[in-house]
Length: 467
Image (cartoon, rainbow, N blue to C red; front, side, top):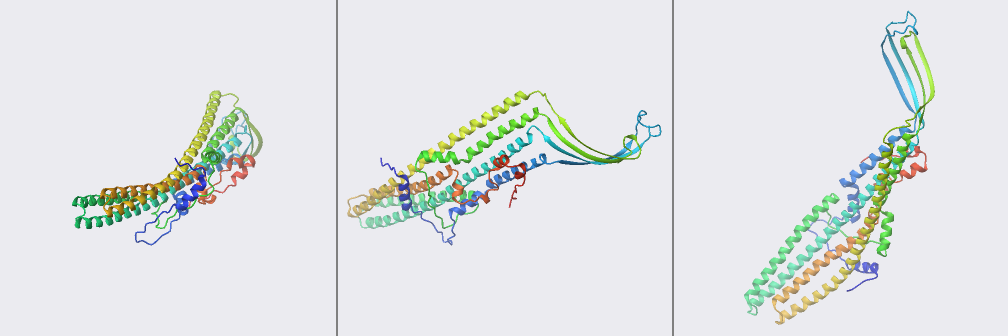
């Protein structure tokens, strides 16, 4: 077996040898760079738009917590008929007298201490927003990889169509030779029938390629949102890892899935702080003024003001131990899910690297096999003309050469795609195509900002609207 140890050098050499032919069906050459196709898939695909809306909604839900960090002002007003029977408090002239009481006032409240409920709620919601952003980023990697796959598949099927057309033209050339030889009496009429059967098989093969290419175009339009252009090319991928372990380390360090799992663990921890706040007293500063007439059965105008502190402490409630135990299990669940995410990412990195190195080796071997098959067809053709080879030998050699060309085109496409899969395994495929931060609604740093800065810094965040 041929083994390559310098995979990056082999990849460069193979990339130079890879030529993806393009088909032009008489239409003007409309350029469709892969970068534009990926950008359209990441920013305009309905899945991407749904994730972006989820990020914005989560951020807006976080900003709703501002009400817990600022004073609350309430305006109240009341009016209605009242009658009091209270001889101990009211004079005989006022007792049992129907009066139209009315009042209006303003009350201000501010939580002085709430057992750190507000802080932990803010941290939990900030972690949830970061999680929504990481879900969007992870979805962007998936969309980008789908776009790359659809893009390369279009090129692959166009190349296969060229190979199929060349195969038909080659069979037509051989058919002319066979007809001349049959007419000259050097071949039997059965060779003419064999040639016609092989020509029909070649045309049937092109028909199958046309069907697959039409399906590929439909897939491309579903992912990218428009039909593929005529001029398409595959850019060279740079800065690939040197080994499987290097790829695994990079993937674990940069994986959006693992970062999403981290936010879930943190959300559980902050929820524990919210639950503990129920066991601590709450202190609220209250102040207000009111003015009214004929209040409480007493005629005349009245006004008063107040300021004070109110304490509320639910020092006992059932079910608290069960709630704490349930939350502990939820935290353990989140930690286990993160461990599984790490394993999944490492497995994906390993499988991607194996596919990459195998595709390098397969492409090189197929290139050598194709060259050998080409020489065989040329020699068989010369020997056929000399009468030392049969028509079946020539046709079998042509079929082998055609099959290897088909396989080589697919192998080259697989090699190109595996390089982009390496970027996706590291959660850097979208960035490779310069999907800028502006294309992602927000940056996943809400939890860090909430813990490092005052809450007011979070509440000043601007949320861009959907375009």
